Image (tube, rainbow, N blue to C red; front, side):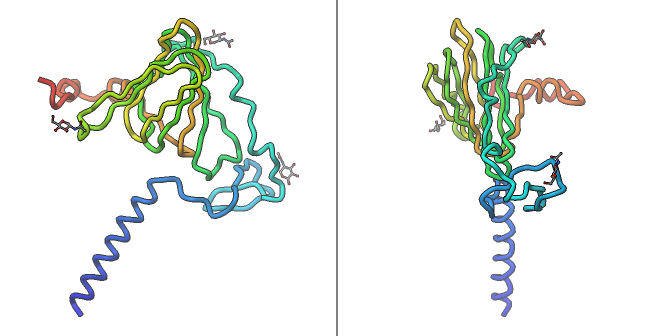
Length: 209
Ligand SMILES: *[C@@H]1O[C@H](CO)[C@@H](O)[C@H](O)[C@H]1NC(C)=O
Ligand SMILES: *[C@@H]1O[C@H](CO)[C@@H](O)[C@H](O)[C@H]1NC(C)=O
Ligand SMILES: *[C@@H]1O[C@H](CO)[C@@H](O)[C@H](O)[C@H]1NC(C)=O
């Protein structure tokens, strides 16, 4: 009897752990679509979100022309990421963005904590890369991309994109989450609010001798 009870407790703990792991990812939808609605006079609630009445959904809810509009790269980084909100994306676990670069422009080292990213170069020449985690020796995986080339950035790893060509560059980035999240490493470390004690940063490299 006691053994059975222990087994049951172990099972419950295992289930609890397993389910908290699963909920780290976008859930699979329980319906064909759940087009985001800002008008809540005529719709349905799905998983706590307000969605457009499926009978009123049209092709335009799954469409955007926004990706052909260049972003303004007149800023310190020389790049602009334009994320396009398509109402129909809601609950489907993907996002798409256009990234414009002026010559020398870059998207500095950053992390998307919730999504793997896939990047397609349309114009120009980009140096891209990501760094593996400590257990894989912080190895830099890097490549120069030309139009038509694609590179993958695994979820949660530090990645960057730099325009190393003489012309503007354009890329399309898609990510496997409705909300990939963004941590820009330099800002998070050196411009936290409030600032981290410099004594902490001075010892930040555990293995630097
Ligand atoms: C909201 O939905 C109702 C019912 O479909 C419609 O009559 C109304 O025009 C909508 N309002 C807006 C702002 O879209
Ligand atoms: C781009 O941004 C800069 C700086 O904010 C601004 O001065 C300029 O007018 C913008 N250009 C366009 C085409 O919007
Ligand atoms: C990481 O470095 C260690 C020690 O040099 C080595 O044994 C291991 O194979 C390396 N692992 C990878 C994934 O490079």
